[in-house]
Length: 450
Image (tube, rainbow, N blue to C red; front, side, top):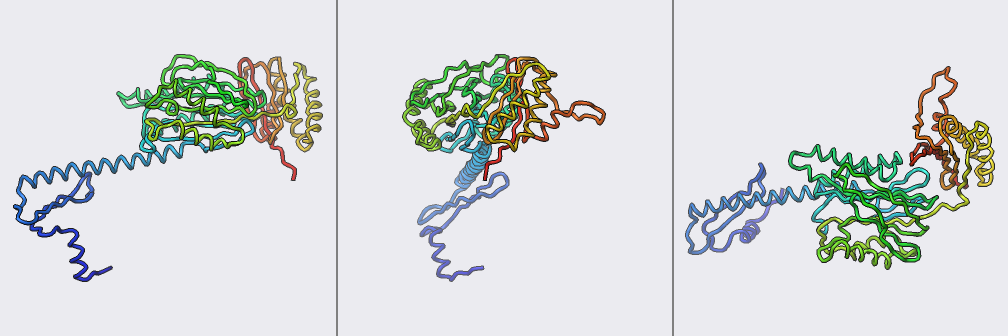
């Protein structure tokens, strides 16, 4: 507890009480059960004392002032929560995978004064592939951030199922329609989004892209030329009943694919076509092989956006890589049980060539089970592929659409343990479906020599 001398107390009051003051009127600032402060008014010199009308005016000023302060407090609290939620929901700014290195940047609307549901994503997929996502949710604040989080989680789940881009967007469109149906009465139009989904395969060096009302990506080739990728966009995610279309393009190693939201290209002083031309020109000048992607992204965002943009802006840059041809091997499989032993012989030769003899026993068992299942339950044509990187990928593809399922075999059963064995020997395994084909894959870690 501290005390002060009479002189210091008198001096303190001299700052609070005007000179020659003879009367004071004080009104508390009270709102929602909280006292936020007070307003004081003084009369000095020869002025008249306060009247009842002035007291009523003071009460009205205090009431409205308290309401304004409380609204400002609540807005600040909600805005901080929305910004924190959105930052937590966004993925890491940079990733480094066998398929590509990526860098994402995000700029909130109004220089941080507002938030919305823009997001980007880079998802590592099996067989060294990479999914790239950019999306924009309708609305602002916590509802938009929450919707963005739900869509991002759904896309991650569907990406793990390895759906084709057009099928994935169809599933997400169904989810958005359900969210709109669950919205409060009168607000279904406030739930909506656009999305671009792309999958890049570093083995084939091909990228499959589908769009749900989202702006097209921009491609910067290794020689510095740029182009807007020609895609066939489908409707936004809130509109159902319309199909989406997948566009496939070839990407050279070292190419940069730019995904973005409309806040980056649509500004006060230019329309989206002008903004897109400016984006392609800036990408051509900024995307240099010797410049880090995250530095390039920050510079692009600073050059292309206003000081206080009206809408959030996101940018995802992906510089592609390729798996060398000598790190892959491919064989066709005959629809004959004798092909299983031939597959084991191929595996032995190839792993010996790669110096992976420590994986030879487990890989032979995995391939034997996968090839046997393909011959027994699948349809030709069938093939076997190996991919070597930090993992060893074994893929068996056939023309059947049957879904393999892991099941518990009884003690007296003569079969049914193949996939269980694969699951025990491999780090992970799964199945993906394409047009008129399916691929069962497994991954084993390759131990680096010490």
